[in-house]
Image 1: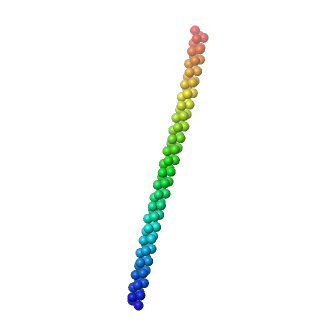
Image 2 (image 1 turned 180 degrees about the horizontal axis):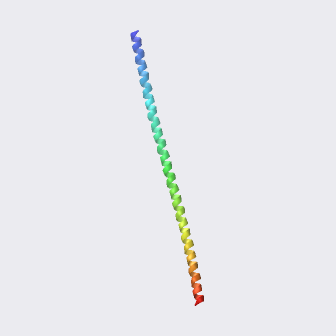
Image 3 (image 1 turned 180 degrees about the vertical axis):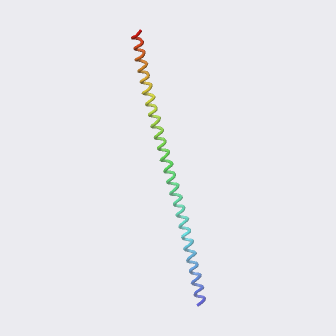
Length: 90
C-alpha cells in the first residue's frame, strides 16, 4: 500500500512538472509572438510616420515653389507695368 502511494505521488509530481514545463514553453512562445507583433507594429508605425512626413514635406515644398513662381510672375508683371508707366510718363 505504501509503495502504491509513493508511485502515485511520484507520478503526480511528474505530471505537475510536465505541465509546468509546457506552460513555461507556451509562455515563452507567446512572449516571442508578442515581441514579434510589437516589433512589426512599431515598424509599420515608423514607416507610416516617414511616409506622412515625406508627403507633407513634398507638398509644402511644392506649395513654396508655387508661391515663388506666383511671386516672381507678379513681380515681373509689376516691373513691366511700372517700366511701361515710366516710359509713358517720360
